[in-house]
Each structure stands twice: as C-alpha cells, then as structure tokens.
Image (cartoon, rainbow, N blue to C red):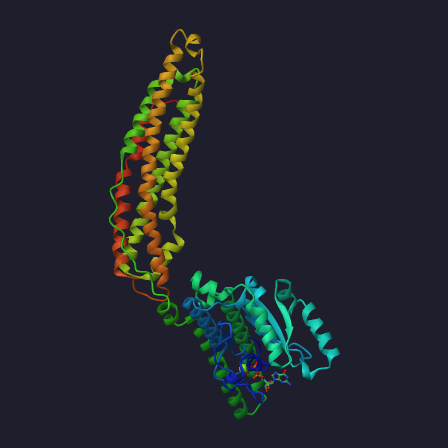
Length: 503
Ligand SMILES: Nc1nc2c(ncn2[C@@H]2O[C@H](COP(=O)(O)OP(=O)(O)OP(=O)(O)O)[C@@H](O)[C@H]2O)c(=O)[nH]1
Ligand SMILES: [Mg+2]
C-alpha cells in the first residue's frame, strides 16, 4: 500500500519471477496507474506459493475510483483470503518515496489509512519500503531516512511497535530481500479483518472506515465553506464564470455525498455471506415447564425456622435470621425477575409480530436482561443458600466434638442440635431446587444467544433471519411466560410463610 506513484507496482515488478514481469503494469506520467487490487502469485522452488498484492493508493483527486472504493476493494480482498483459509498473510508493505522533500497531505492520509487497516497487532509484519534512491544523493537519502524514522507523525510510531524500514533500489535483489524477510514472519490477521469477519462490524464502524468517514465529512465541510465564499464573490463576478464554478462545486459535493452513502452501504453482501454461509439454525426444542418445588420447600423451611426460633434464640440467634433473610431476599429477587421477564416477554412478542430483524437486533443489544438477569437471580440465590449451609455445618461440627453430650445433660443442647440438623436438611433441599432452576434457565439463555447470533448474522437484511428463528423465539416466549406464571405467587407465599419470624 501507499500513495499513488510511489513505486508500489515497480516494487512488485521487481519481486516476481522474470516471466511474470510483463503482467505488472507500472505507471507512466502523473496519472495513477493501478485502480484495482491485483494479486499475482508464483511457486517457489521449495514448493511454497507466494502471493503479492498490488493496491491503488488513497487519492481523492483521482477520477473514477473513490477512496471508499479502494477501502472496499482492500477489505473485501483481505476477507475473502481470510475466509478462503488457504492463504496466510505474513506481510504488509507500505511504500514511501525517499525523494520527497516534504511529506504532503496525501502521504499522511495514506499512512493513516494503512495504520487503521493493519492495527497495532499486525505492525510486526509491516515493512516500510523506501523507493527512488536513485533520485537523491546517498547523504540526502540517509538524512531523510533518519527524519522519517524519528518523526512522531511519520514512521516512528510504527517502528516502535515492531515495523521495519528497508530500502528498495529498483533491483530484484532488494525486492526479494523484503519478501524473504516477511516470509519468515508468523502470519497475522489485520485489524480490518478482525473487525469485519470476527466482530461483525459494518465497514463504516471499522477503524479504517471511521477514518475515511471523518475525512469525507471534513471535505464536505470545507466545500460548504467554499460555497459560502463563492456566494459572497458572486456579486463581483460575471454571471457565466460563476455558474461554471458553482456547477463544478455541485459535482464535487454530489461525489462526496455519494461516497459517504457508499461507505455506509458497506461491503457487498455477497462477500460477507456467500463466502460465509449463515450457520444452519436449528430451532430449540420446547422447554419443560419450570419446577415450582422451590416455593414449597422454601415455605417449609420458613415454617421450620419459625418453629425452632425460640430454642435457637439463646445460643444461635444468627441461624434463623440468616436463613429467613436469605429466603426473603430470594422472594424479592424472584418478584423483580418475574416483573422484568413479563415485560420483556411482551416486548419480544411485538418483535416477533413485526418480523423485523432490526427490532430483534435492537432488543438483544439494549436488553440483555432475560439472558443474564434471571439466570443470575437463581445462581445468586443458590450461592447465598450455600453460604448458609456452610455456616450451619460449621456450628454443627462443634456439637460433634467429644464430650458434647456430657456438657448438655439437660437436653437443651441435644434439642438445638436436632433443630440445626432439621434446618440444615431443609436448606439443602432448597439449594438443590435452586440449582434445578439454574439448570432450567441455561438452555433458554443459550437459545436466546443463538437467536441473537442469527439476528446479527443477518446484518443489512430487513426480514427475519429464518423461519426456524421464529419457531425458537416462540418457544422462548412460551418458556418466559411459563416462568412468570409459575413464580408469580412465590413472593407472596414466602412473605406469608415468614410472618412471625422476628427478623
Ligand atoms: N527514478 C525512479 N523511478 C521510479 C522508481 N520506482 C518507480 N519509479 C517510477 O515511478 C512511476 C510510478 O511507479 P509505479 O510503480 O507505477 O507507482 P505506483 O505506486 O504503483 O502508483 P499507482 O499505481 O498509481 O498507485 C513509474 O514511472 C516508475 O517507473 C525508482 O526507484 N526510481
Ligand atoms: Mg501501481
């Protein structure tokens, strides 16, 4: 990569075996030559296949191919290669003219785009190749090279993070030198591929896309300013000239707006989908009805606590208090989860009725509630019960020490021991029920996750991803409703059972 006319194609011309040189077109004159991403490959003697890829530079003054086109071509090429899996990217080359006395805006722009496409992690696979050494004296060249290497807004940040700088003197030897250096590198995945293929970002949301987006916006802003100036000058100029100038500006503006629109439209779906077919989506089977034993067992536990409260009051007042408060906290958490799930279930119903992927995506994005919250409610309740169980077990172990029976001849200790054991057993029963409910939620949260993936995959589309997704969604909603119904009385029942316990 690199700006127009720096010698990218010439470099490739020098890298390929002699019989392929005719295929590499080197520019003549000032016009930019390369307007496509052009791979060229050959087999080495030891059986490896090398593929070198020429790219057009980012250059907003070029006619026909916009910078957005260039970005799309590069991104699509990299993603196809990555998904094709037979290619491994070992090197990225940025070409710069050592003969440039000053580094202009286009060079900075190209360098910025290059950095955003690569990302820091791939910089160790980067070589900055300097060309046109025959146009400078050795002294000049060396001095400029030093400047380029040490300047904070040029190559220094790249070199600091693992990039290398190498000279190319227009000979096959120096080009081969660069290629061989890169072939030894561990393959890398550039940032744009990570963003689009792995993180499923839209082109305009990638680092490179965002960079281009803000540049186009900046150009538009400048243009609007120029238009304003033009309007002011209109009064002094002849009409014809003005009209021509205004037409020219209108054309530029239209081009920029179209480019912005193009960028927003992203990569062609065929690249994203044809090479990466959506996973076959299997609808989840219907979910079993949620267990309600937990409420029954919790009520029983509270009754036990109430029954034994007086006998434990003197020696172990903490036990009834912690068991009861844990149960009441649980009842409150269930109340919140039932309300939340009820609300989400009705939202999901309207999403399902609309069959609109975007609403589904939005729902999943802004509302991870059913996924995490209710599952978390039960997991936390079970965890709290485990703590209570451990505490009671710790107390009971002191009762089991030798000599215990002698110290409590009057039988009070024996009674307490019995009470603690009964409460412990009942608490364990409740903890087991809670674990069952955690397990009950797991396939449902997984199913929601799968629907979410399917919805994500359908980026850009409007109708629902798949009819099987609708089936799953229906089953999920049914399960959420069944949960609400099963647990809607839980808080009330438990509060009632807890009446009379002095918390
Ligand atoms: N003197 C001199 N000229 C060079 C050198 N490298 C390339 N050129 C010339 O510079 C011009 C542009 O080179 P290309 O290789 O086409 O540049 P490019 O980077 O591929 O340009 P685009 O395809 O337009 O992006 C051509 O006329 C080359 O012959 C060099 O090291 N020294
Ligand atoms: Mg070229």
